Image 1 (spheres, rainbow, N blue to C red):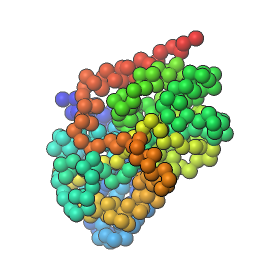
Image 2 (image 1 turned 90 degrees about the horizontal axis):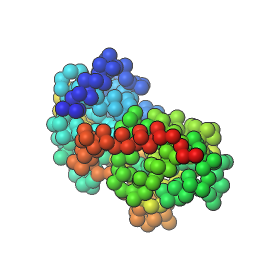
Image 3 (image 1 turned 60 degrees about the vertical axis):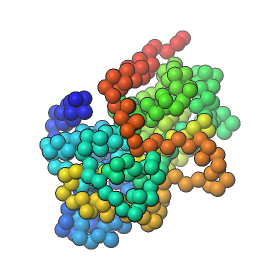
Length: 345
């Protein structure tokens, strides 16, 4: 099976799963271990973790920050009993999380707060979406005149066609082979956007840069190394608070992602994982996530416009199609062919 092969290949490449950790932190001074593995930056979730630790003084919380593909490999290995499992897994690459649930790697849980979630944000009572974050376009406010800022994918196509010298090698997006989130956004775009083929061709013709990380992309736009970037997770932009960076929620449609939370079937401390989930879904937890930029808020006068173009990514089996071996291979081949094609003179 492809998923097992991916786990084995990544673990061999890493040597040990711990080598793939981006960072780790401790919260609380209790004696009972509670291990969370997540793609969310520690600094972003720290206030919520601190507040939860204050309410559960018996817990010693270890929070490990991972890249999305490495976290998936580790979670699959833990599901197979090869390594120590986490007590909770929390990831933005929700197609990979749905695949874990589909592999029977999760344990169910039901509470008043999980029942209150809309159907698009829970599946089989084994995965829950606790955030609401838009995929946005960002731009350098010093380098693009306000009237020239693209507000939709159609506008972006026009900019790439009409100003080729301006945009050449100065538009960034995720490297979808390195970023599970980037692959998910690109795949959903291929379904939602009538412009996807033209957009891919335009990015290729403009010699757009496919790179790995949100922080790197945002910083480079802020510094003017990139003119703009496409499909960046809006919460990262808000938390980075970069100078000279404007944000656009595309007016043709805006994807909204809910980070997936899962309790592994062999978790050592599932009770703590259940408590943390309910905390994140509580009024206090949701306020903390809002302050961290993980729950998008819209001004009342913008609410109708946003609702009309909002496209939520549901936590549901259709996401598994993105991981079909043939579909993924063909999609990556199409993407790489476009980005490696020599620019048109």
